[in-house]
Image 1: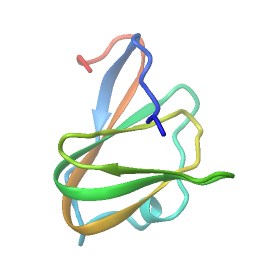
Image 2: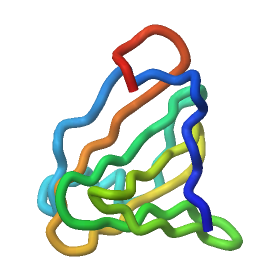
Image 3: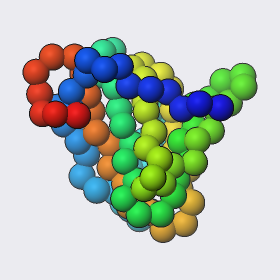
Length: 100
């Protein structure tokens, strides 16, 4: 299964603090979504996590420092931690902002 891809016309405008297995917000472990027009990029710095898009069939992607995950606007998703991990989520949208 191929992971979702960012459109070429989005730019990073914000990012979360670094999360670990002990500091990840509970809302990321349950179902969460992004606002309309906002894409997310899950960037794993150390370790691994599973990025899950519920549905039929469920889509599951193992993310690592070599493989980031893309969150589409308004798409329900969650993460499952796989041991020790450090990661952040970058937020992107069309328009002006920092380089993606």
